[in-house]
Figure 1 (cartoon, rainbow over the protein chains, first blue to last red):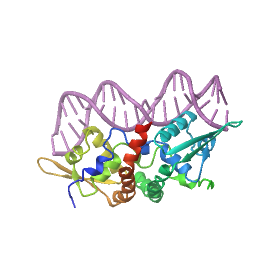
Figure 2: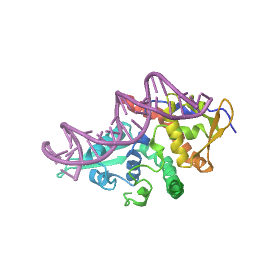
Figure 3: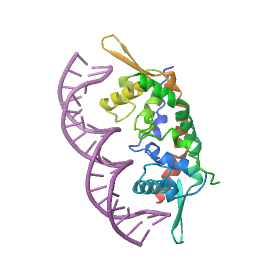
Figure 4: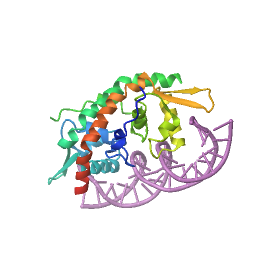
Length: 117
Length: 117
DNA sequence: CTGTATCCTCATGGATACTG
DNA sequence: CAGTATCCATGAGGATACAG
């Protein structure tokens, strides 16, 4: 108990902005959306209820820049574009699952606690 | 591949605001800071470089409301206040560790990818 | 279908100073 | 030591409309 804090634990998070925008509103949900294979723009727009095309584009571009997602455009008519997780992006699935499981398991606890206050 | 999306996976995250403010700038760091035992206000203020007392207070109050943290004030002079994780708060440590590990392992990859673009 | 272009709101969180 | 009190900057994200 009360061992000194390990400074290294913060090394990865010390930047003004988080390396991965795990904290933002959509990135994690997008990763989950893409876990079973490539999805098209509208296939992402729909299940993420409430996201606007602008924000979806921004999020996907950011994830592309970070190498989490690849965008593939097919020269067809009507145009078809597919987004898929890269192998690197897939490495996020496991730690993210841990958080999702926690949330699913403890959501009711949280609701009770909040209702009581 | 390309199995249909499991809608339940989003059930826990469908609210306008996340149940737990995992996404915010300080909550996760505070959990990590408190993992080894109770800490005093200034013991949290210092290692979280850059946080202001106002924001620290706000964050701790929010975590208190959610039952993640307990505040204990000792009637001494000078005043002493300790913050500690509740058992419930401790359940967050494991999934959070998964994310921390991921970040630590892949930070360099991310840096390379960004430098290349 | 797959996006862009504008405009705008609003909450997070930072700066600074002060108090019991 | 452990906060409060103000004020304010910023940018993520939303609304809406339009385009290739």
